[in-house]
Length: 344
Ligand code: ASP
Image (cartoon, rainbow, N blue to C red; front, top):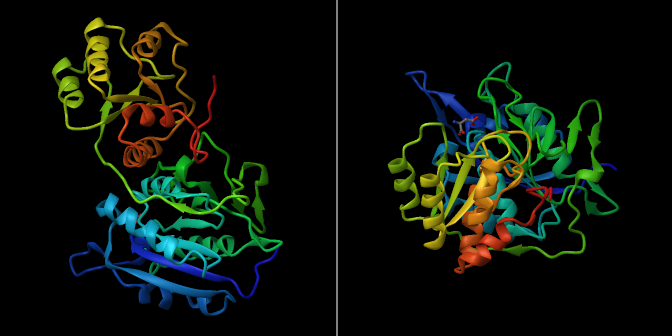
């Protein structure tokens, strides 16, 4: 398995710390792609052909939104045939949301789409940007018998390639910014690139289908002991079609009747409530404890081991696809892009 000298890679530069500089007041502000190029002399030594599309304006990823996600997905489809792989340079703060939504929007992907960035700007002496970017480019250009080895949306950070819809930012201070505890690392970069072949998606017999619609009427209810009924009611009554409910442990909540009645009322009123855990490792097991049996009985949906990022973006995607709430409910519990593991 070797990188081929004729590989064409399309880079989408959205912004983020990787290309930031400090202004006079010491604040980090985004800078254009020339900064990255000038700080990466190695780019002129690699044999793949790079084409760069820069966002205008370049953004901190906290300003990412569904409209930009759709444009990013469209950009990949428009250039899909011309390029062997795609690298998206992106701020790490919301990278896991972008990676998750792209995994849903780009069905049947047969080429790598790798998001990467860095914790320190590329101009800093101890930056992690060079390694991250060069490794992302190498993996994006790797083929075996003419077929891309990676056929999914991923995140490359600190020498590890993660499935995009399984990863989340867990550390804002270390170079090891991302983790994916519920799914194995896809590639480990040391002296060699060690591919975990069994963990990779294989879409070789599929065709790319771009999905064009998102519906962002999604809410979040994070539980804590003592949360007030009127707080819960305000969220359940808000103008959303679905609510991601972050529960305790393996999907547990209070068994208080007022709580179950509020949820049941919202479900009967046509809202979907998706149960994911506040724990970062492990899965929701609806009905395992008495404290989740009531939820199952009233029709709360099982989010299994999905990340928060995958849950929110999957609902936006499904709501864009289906006006019928029951179809959204049906598909959200299914594994559609490798984002969850069903355990019952
Ligand atoms: N605030 C930055 C961003 O997400 C942080 C980073 O790039 O790591 O755009």
